[in-house]
Amino acid sequence: MSQAEGRSRGKGSGRGRRRRGQRAHGAEGGHNIKLSKSLSYLLRHGAAKMGFQLDPGGFLYVDEVLKHPQFKRYTADDVRQVVADNDKKRFALQEEEGTGRLQIRANQGHTLEVEELDLTPITDPAEAPTVVHGTFLSCWDKIRTQGLSRMRRNHIHFAPGEPGEDGVISGMRRTCQVLVFIDMEAAMRDGLQFFRSANNVILSPGNEEGLIPPKYFQQVLQARPRRVLPLDLPSS
Image (cartoon, rainbow, N blue to C red; front, side):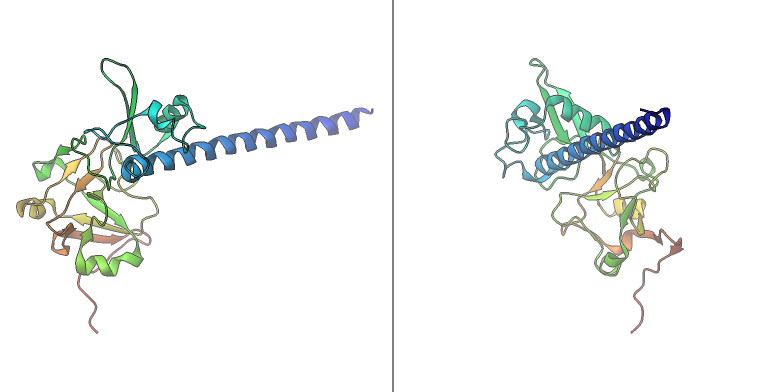
């Protein structure tokens, strides 16, 4: 074999190893994404349907979750990795006092009732100077007439700032097109409640109809291109 052939084969072998490494890394990423989505559904919405009962704090035992057919391919280390890698900090892990058994919960986003979810009441508007809900232009006409709705969830979700700002890790998608800022003084003065979750998401159950009416919108911006959106309806 000539030196040129050896170099050619060596380069090809290196490219092959890189491609195999990329495929392996991609497979691992897909594995973790699927686990994250499955855990999110289980802990926020599907526990009862899947045969589980959340404890008062919203926790399940990891070892019991891993016995379920949907999770049997995963390990406790996989769960730890997903929790550590989740940039929005959607999940919390703890070891049960006395037994050391690993437990997991979703920090917010539930449609299931959770008796003692770790939420801190906001008692003064100054504690949350910026409260903003992210949505899309396709939803805006309905929101500006009816208000923000918690829909099937227990709370309406807000961020304490815009994506990318210091301390803002969750509360809205980066792809949101419309930013709805809440007048906290007016909303709290009229009895609307707000809470802060363990991953710094601002939550509100809304009024008795599960809504935050448009009169509590302080300002509404289109994200890109940046412009103020009018709150009044266009004349017919």
